[in-house]
Length: 110
Length: 116
Image: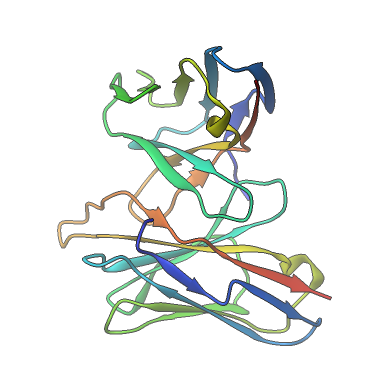
């Protein structure tokens, strides 16, 4: 099935460092979403973006909806151990489905 | 906690069997979407239900079917199970308005299906 290109595939960082990940698509989306998934759990919504160019923050997280509507990025500032997990971007082309990225696995070392 | 619940949490079946997975949507939501997540992959859209009817379908064969009930809860049925059906099955609820716009989808914890 279709999946968005998400990079990097994995990151190993030290506590306190900033993190940046991005997602690209060959198609235009009306909505971009970022989710975090812990092992054995469902994805948890972090940030939702609804307009091209939109920049939205949620605590230490900041995400942007690309102007071309084909990309988005997520930044995490001052990482902490509980940031560990898999981060997925998801684009919504219409009302019925989300198309997910391949995921970025984040590991934070103390 | 999203308020979306799924049962069972784990299930083991053998090839050729049939399985039914259940999902209760978040209060105030009228739409349920189902996703399949293979190990190491992102979730893949199976289908969505709104007003008890299928409202969009991904690239899955007809042996994947579903139901939505008047209380907006939903079932996913898979017939003639294959080994590749082993995955985490996620449901997500959202609110679709009559104007066609929809709020964000919130996911349940998933059902881990293993096919032997």
